[in-house]
Image 1 (spheres, one colour):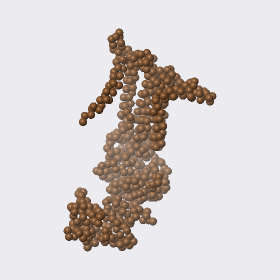
Image 2 (cartoon, rainbow over the protein chains, first blue to last red):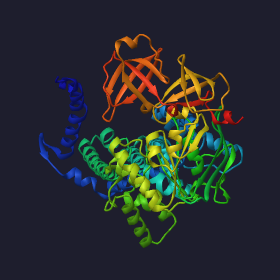
Image 3 (cartoon, one colour):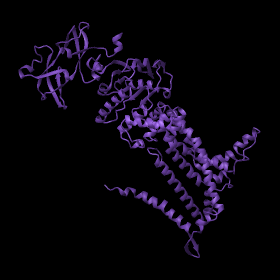
Image 4 (tube, chains in turn purple, green):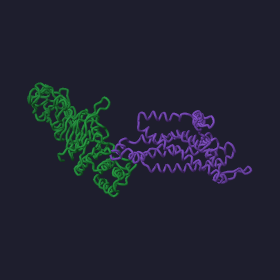
Amino acid sequence: MNRKWLAYPYIIWMIVFILIPLIMVIYYGFTIDDNGSVVFTLGYIRKAFEPIYFKAMMKSFLYAGIATVICFLLAYPLALIIAKKDTKGSSMLFVFILPMWMNFLLRTYAWLTLLETNNGVINTLLKALNLPTLNIIGTPNAVILGMVYNFLPFMVLPIYNALAKIDPYVLEAANDLGANAIQRLIKVVFPLSIPGVMSGVTMVFMPAVTSFVIPNLLGSGKVNLIGNLIEQQFLMTYNWGFGSAMSLILMVIILMSMGFMQKIDNNLEGGVGIW
Amino acid sequence: MDNKVLLRLVNIKKVFGSQVILNNISINIKKNEFLTLLGPSGCGKTTILRILGGFENPDSGFVMLGEENINNVAPYKRNINTVFQRYALFTHLDVYGNIAFALNIKKMNKKIIKEKVTKALIQVNLQGYEKRSISKLSGGQQQRVAVARAIVNEPEVLLLDEPLSSLDLKLRKEMQYELKSLQQELGITFVYVTHDQEEALTMSDTVVVINDGIIQQMGTPESIYNEPINAFVADFIGESNIYDGIMIRDEVLELFGHTFKCVDKGFNENESIDVVIRPEDVRLTKVSNSQKTTNHTSRNNQLIGKVTDCIFKGVHYETCIETFGEEWVIHDTENFVPGDYVSIEVDPFNIHIMKKHRQVDDDES
């Protein structure tokens, strides 16, 4: 029986919410309104590579990269602990994921309240204890902190998944063949969890590189990442053409890096990933 | 096989929660012996293997390897290797990487590693498979890699946990012979766990039958098959017809109200016993209509029964016969038709008498 019609709502969804907007972005990015007639241009694309914008893009990749590395360093040991202690691990995982049920903006605002230089919770406490205050709001450190906090669960979950799927007999086999706990971690557990690490890296790096709310709030407008510049073009200067051009460049870079990750993933057979 | 005891389990006891998994298990395993732990699932045989491998600790008792108590020696420090049930191969490594794993950890010379891996691959008939990825191998090939990965370390003892259970019947038979000849060639002690009695009888020097965490019987395959010590062993090793009987006096017993001669002595008068008769130890003869109603004959060791089923099994017919509400399963070369009446005749030496106790320990006490 032909059930193709079941796919129609999704096709309509894809056309209305993905395909048409994408075509519009491409249209705005490559055309300019020259006295009422629409002309093809590469000017916006070229402009995006001007030092001031290019630097913002590089900075985005740098901060997102740092945030991803920190996330990985925090998430891997945590995922190991959760995956090891089966029954207690699941409740620990639950507690860990709990904040994810709260709105992303709320969570970021909460950090703002905590970190604010003058009236923030942390600094009030530090002052009361006569300790030097913390002035990180408006610095890249605050932005990276915000990224790590918000995206850490996206690193923990896929790594946990990959670790939990490792056959316990494989671990015993490693012991049986002379590997102590550390050798086993390096030579068996980590290689088998690489697909999970790949997924985690992708899921943290992608949203981090395009984020604009976190730098807006925690960078208090002083840390401008590519996401902020795009937002400004659409909402403040109304230069939709330039905004579209920057979005396109970002999208191409992201697609390329995803393709790269996919390729690494495919080379690791029998792996688990969430893509 | 020489007579030196290599591995000794002494009074091993293991309890999980309130359940006694192993109760006072003592086994001496000789050098170069092929010893099989045989029993139904959940009988504790795998736990014994895991204690030998160092993955479980006994609650009491100890394991001796040579002169050394190895209770507290970690698995990676024991000169014992395991072939796991589902092979537990490293999927991130190729065949070579799997077999070389332990040698790499020992930081051996690369050239020596290569020689050893090549030799191990020849021993398991997988020459030229070095670069294959594990996921591209069949079940039988994975099993061979698992064996090669263990024997490349030249362990004193190789533990095998139902290694053939996931292979198809034909391959399983092939691998039985291969494992046996590999064991003889390498001169390594094999401790083999299986629930398949045929596998145990084919390969082993010694079979240890285990049930409910207790050793039921230990001996050569022949002695286990021919002289089962109790009804459980008789039933588990091969097919058996087991009935309740009464020992009237030495060499005479009563079964279904009939007197049978047997060769066993030393029971109490009128003691309740289990009577075990192997399916192949019975002679069937078709009887005429006039005899069928009487249900017994004047001859000793003979009963009349009604054929309920007769199935062709290749070498023999498996015939089911009903007598006095009990079923007999008999292997015979003659084809009977359901409804036929037959005489069932058993020679005295083919009647095995067992005490009503199911466990060795009870016998001793």
